[in-house]
Structure formats: structure tokens, C-alpha cells
Image (cartoon, rainbow, N blue to C red; front, side, top):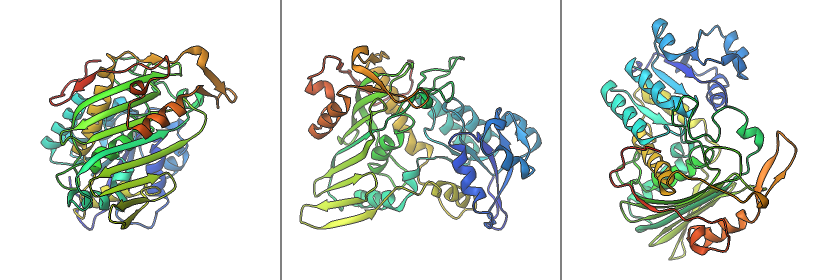
Length: 407
């Protein structure tokens, strides 16, 4: 279903809590734009959302499920911001009813779900885009264009470190934060690599895509270390090494179990230049001949993906981050679990302390930040450097034909 260039794009909001507020605020704070209209809200617990009263006052119909919405309505575009385990089934339902989809990150929990979403997209003839906000910014897209054009030389290594504390309130805000599976047995695989910091892992693969704007590098192998300090079923700390099918090394370090924010710090190494970024700063290429190129900042443009989706429905644009471009990140987080045989290493209880008051309390692993910074600087996985009794290396997982996560 493609809206005519003169008609407003009809939008259904799916999930209005949490990150759903970003979509709502983007739309409702731009009331003078005439290229969109809301036609419904899908959320079984909508009354708990901060925007509930505002949406209710607009006279919008509310539904518990997408199936109920489609019995009474239709839409050109769905903004899906529901919990991870619902991304794939809701996307497929929307597509089956002729609706284009902008799904919040991550695309889904498993590679098999990503394949289902892709097949449903192909059958419906609609688009499925994923909301990795950096992928829609000029800073990232201009850098990607220069990489594809060879202006920085061949890529050799990309690495990112994002050390972001999270409180017990973060993990207690719902029943799926930090979970491997739902009570019904659906895969969730929530973790910093698949949620809070997942866009930084995706960003490196996205930048290394070779075939046009909406592409990403395919992982050839994944090796990971997975740890946790919090009382959750999945991990809150990981270091990964990914080798792409072009032989580029991708290193990723992230944790929620520390006292202070650090990063993201990003370093992209090429034959002729190195690109650096640190949070709050700009993406800058430093060439070996002494030249520099400032690409600007990718931060602060969360709204772009929503307007791009509306423009794409109207035939005025194409989405930069499709389900195809987002799938390699899914493979990486699935293979990371396989790398440790789905056994998360618990940090030693005697080395984990609590900081803050309950509800705003962080579990901090002693020495973890220093360990990860050292590994980042050495282009190594922590277990390769040693020095801590709790370190556990993972095995290398071949992802050349990775199609099923079994857990």
C-alpha cells in the first residue's frame, strides 16, 4: 500500500510505552505537517503509557492486538515499538495486511525470525525498515559512501566500546529486560549488544556494507565472551570479535555493570585513514597524508527515521536501514550465545558491589572497566590478555551459512 503523493500517510502505532514515546513525540510535536495521520493504536496495556491520555484525547481507536486493528481499519505504515519478542510476528501481520513497517531496533531475536520477516516483506511487496537511528544520518551515510568509493583505502578493523551503567530499575521495568526467553518460551535475548548498545554493533557492520546504501557486512565468524553481574537470565557484559566475509575485524565491547558511563568510543582503521568518534564529539577521518574530513555527528537525529519512512511510503525516498541491513547484527548476537555454548559466566559475587539506592542501584564489577579499556586498546578479547580469574574465552563460531539459533 503506497499513499499517493497528495494523501497523508496513515499510521498505526504498535507499542506506545518505552521507545514508542519517541515516535509519538516526533509526530505530535509537528502538527503542521500534512503528510501523515494517525489511524489507530495497538497496545494491550496502553493505559500505562505516558502518552495514553494525549492519544486518547485525539479520538484514536485503541486495540489490544494488530489483528483486532485490521478487522476494523487499515494503514499505510506501522511504527512498531513493542518488546523484542513481538517484532517478528507483528511485522509479518502488518505486511500480510498491506502495511509498510518501521520496526524499532533490534529487528527481532533470532536469525530465523529475520528470515521470516524478509520473506513476508518480499511476498507483500512492502518495505521493512529497522530503527537504528544512526543509519539515517548524513554523518554515517556520507562516511559509508566514502568507504564504498575507496576514498579511505581498504577497511582493516572497526572497534567500538560502549560502557553504559544500568540500574535495577532498568532491569525491573518490565518482564523481559535481560531475559533470554519469555515465560511462553519465545526468544528475547535482551542484552546490551541486542538493545541499549546494539546500534553500535550494527553501525560497524552497516558502514562496511558494500552494495549500496542499505547494505551491511556479513559476518564470517564470531567469537565472544559473555558475563553477568545482574540477576538476569542473559548477559549484561560482552566482548566480541567478528570477522566479516571481506576479512575485516570488528571488535565490540559493552557492559551495564560499571559505575560510570564511557563511550561510545569508535575507531575505524583503513589503509589510508583512521576515523574516530567519541560521544559528544564528531566523526572525523584523519588521513595519513595529514588531511582530515569532518563528517559531523550522528547523534541527535532520532526523528529522521520516522520522516524517512513517511517519505518512502509516498515514493519520495528509500529507507537506508532495511531488514536486510539489520540482519547481520542478529547473526552476531545469536552466534555470540553459541560461542559460549549458551552458558553465561557469572562474575564472582565477592567482586560485585552495589552502588546507589534500590530502584536506582547499579551492580558494579570491580576492575571490569579497566579490563575492557585495556582490551579495546590492545585490539584483543579480554581473555586473550588474561589477568583476571573470571575471564572465560568463547569458541569461534562459523557463521558463513548461519540460519538457525537453537539456544
